[in-house]
Length: 239
Length: 314
Image (cartoon, rainbow over all chains, first blue to last red; front, side):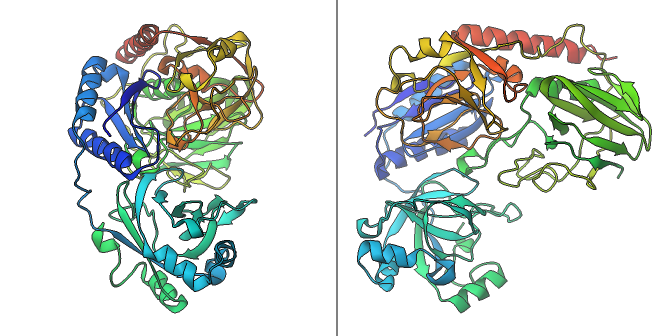
């Protein structure tokens, strides 16, 4: 589980690579290493970026002792992985499924030979892991979706997917933090903003978080959207 | 607070500082100047901090009206610049009087110019940086390029920081034809056939029309993957050459996304990113693989030249 290699990515980045598979334990190891390196605040280190199975360490080569950095990273990476989770509570995300907010819910139901209600039940039943945050600010790759509803991306991506849209792409699910083009199957929308630079905590989801969706009706969606967030059982208190 | 009025925005004029570092784990791209050396030079010339925000001018420049008297400097790409219709110098600080018009005209060489204004551009920082990232609509002027009618607020000059005489030799060589960019192999050179690094160096690549601040799509000898063109998405450093299934590499630049799912054969060395940042569609690149020691030596030489210049303040 702890096999790794360290490779250079140019003269200003090191990458620690763990096993090349998408696996919660491998991912947890990468995120633990990234959090340890972030907390270490090593001089010259500009950014530490965990992904599915690797950690990139960006540094200023003129302000960094390369050998010392490599030795430190190697020592941290070699530490045994801990079983503990992040210690952060699950992020709970209200979603209004279907209708105009979830235009692909019917397609996912047809794909999975389920009713729309059963798709919603399947999507809300699991607690997902945020394997990685990337693509655009605050976009968390959540997995893994139950196989029955794991519909592939749309053949033709939409030109504009609204903020808060909740999509499925194969075994991944996620929330669009900003209006972008996108090909995920949109099953609903959350009134929460995954990314808001003006909020005290700008990011709803951190890599390694547990994420749970729960269904709300359209009136509730509108109320929450007006209030700028959930009023109960919501995630803003927990992040 | 005094400011600058945008009479014409130009093709792509954005506010840039040294970039939004520290949030890539949140998916926030770094942005920052495409040519970091010219950005730093422009700031030094007017007596600004290195991290002060400048205007990055791309291909077709803006026209600006100054509300008060300011010292400014323009570095990087060669444009014909005029101040109230009279030619203004490049690479040296000069005084702009209140209500005068600074205009970027014909571009001669290079793709991006940096206009530093004494006191710096002082839009509100987002996540600690003023750098504009257009795709995520973040930083700078409401996250977008400047346009007619905008007003940019300027900071207060630090009176203790003098302006600087221009360097004797140019610190950024504008790209030759082809531009020479040195690379280090990796991080995923082993995801390609064993001759792929030779192929990369065998003939120049042309910067494609679909090239922007995110990256340059290159056209040239095809690079062959050893086992498919998909990897589990991982981090995408500045200057990395990622290679999709087409075998045509994409050179990732300042506005790159934080992660990507294509194998990356090699990475341009830090010292050569300033030259890379001056390239535009139609320009050509000759890549050569170097050693980590050569990369470090080149970066130290560049830093020494910059520091000698920064310390030689008037």
